[in-house]
Image 1 (cartoon, rainbow, N blue to C red):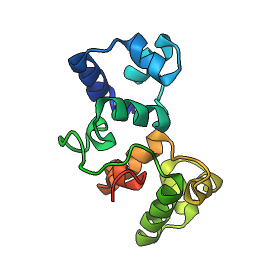
Image 2 (cartoon, one colour):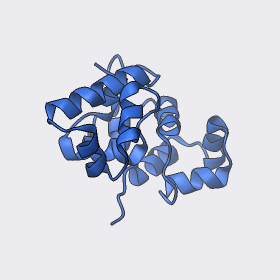
Image 3 (tube, rainbow, N blue to C red):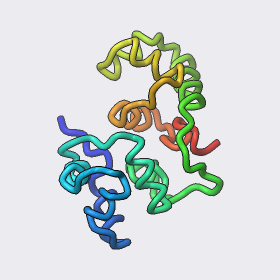
Length: 148
């Protein structure tokens, strides 16, 4: 099964506002072809690039991911807070009474990956973020520490 996380909104907002794929690729510091793959979801866009795009267009991650029709949040921070994100992921996991192993099984990853996210060592991967937020009705912006 293919999960379409952001394809429709990402392309639509770029076309509505006007920059080319090449211009967005330059902002991200990548080749246009790679950005085109992100836009078609041939390749999954890393959260750090998706966040840069959201900041550029002044839209929320939740909007791009299709979780809300509200385009942006008041008092949203530009940067992802890895430490706060890790704490929020751990809080979510404990509220659900999941172990790291159980959450890893749900996401089809490893316990060590979940531990790295919770320690704030790494930013949660886009597909995992999408799955958690969609399946449990959470805000991606909240989980990543962009809003309170």
